[in-house]
Length: 102
Image 1 (tube, rainbow, N blue to C red):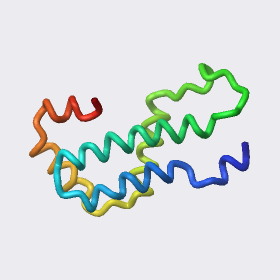
Image 2: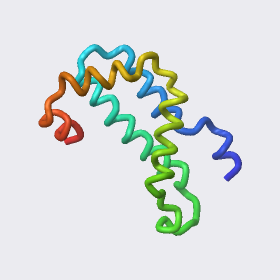
Image 3: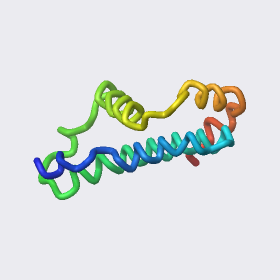
């Protein structure tokens, strides 16, 4: 378990989110965020893979999940994150937002 903790946690998700800085299209920026979410989930699953533990007992609460997202956002060190969010909010309609992960 200690060896798993020594690895850089959520590195794939951090790098994916960091790539939002190089994306021009608001809908592609949104897709980047959705992909980041998937990578966070994948990282959590990979961490517990092969560990003999009841999965119901390690389920993350909303507070723990938010903490992970905050960790990924801080580590990504995105310049002007609010500007990227403003572009998405301004130029993606509700249909695009709700159908991005399909």
